[in-house]
Amino acid sequence: MINMVEDNFDEVEETPVETFDVNYSCLRCGTTVSNTELSRLPEIKCICGFRVFTKVRPPVVKTIKAI
Image (tube, rainbow, N blue to C red; front, side, top):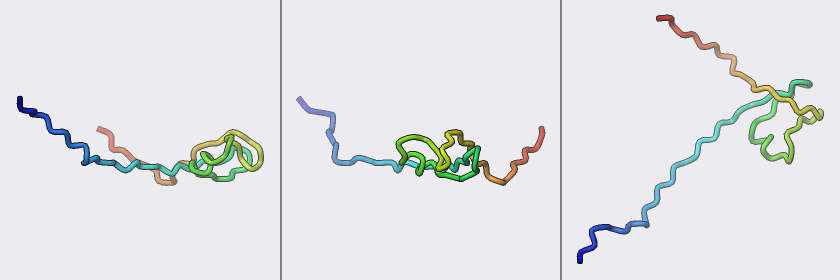
């Protein structure tokens, strides 16, 4: 009997994982912290002790044409 299936496990393609650097700002003191810095800490907390962050938006305003 002829085996029609080829076992080719040597070629493994790895796709790079895209990481997005998101900046957050403390609601109390305004300190900006990146997402990677927050993930290193054991708990999500600012240096001032406050735990509420807002996402910093880019200063570019998008305009969309109406149909």
